Image (tube, rainbow, N blue to C red; front, side):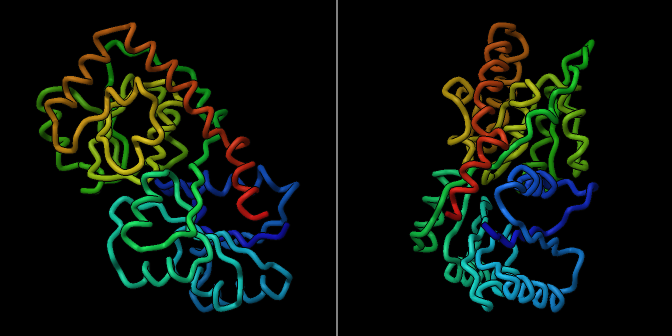
Length: 289
């Protein structure tokens, strides 16, 4: 199978998940002939020509990770397009509407997100593909902290609920790390005892499955697709957005009860196996056959 695979960036310094997404091309390299286009490396018009070149070389299917322009170019050259989009805010902007109408298939991370796209944009051809994770990357020796460390790790953005961090930190100590390169996340998680995520909304929050892989519990807001990727036990530690008092209480509950803590760690370690890259790779491959 031949597949055009477009991704916005592959820099080791980026704080998003692009490098992890790109790992799928290595996992499936013996089954799929990938034509990888990293958009940041080329100006728009050159990307248009590169996509045309891929089409002339016999590539007929395209996996487009978020990019509007690459999707439009791929459709212009008659690719069958699989458009990955899993964004919590779901703003009604004209380019997104156009791309969702043009795409042969929308690929998104959870059932909840699929239902939101269906309701808001009136589209039916939707496939669910979870984010994937290389569990080996998170086999980092756990640090032994004298004091319990609660970590916030994410973009410095209102979408991540950063405006609530000041209020939360008045009652519990938080280690706050903004926009860290993705390669540093395994180390940061290994140095933490608990993760918090007070987001206004999420699609498929990668940091949550990374915390599971690293063996640390989390307290997060119950937004976007989070409910679809957590276990029954983990759902006890999902709170409403803005309910900082409950978030703080849940943090204290986890850190003060060793049995709860151990059960959450074990639960997360078992749950994250669903998103292991080899397992999700089979689902990825089956999208296109």
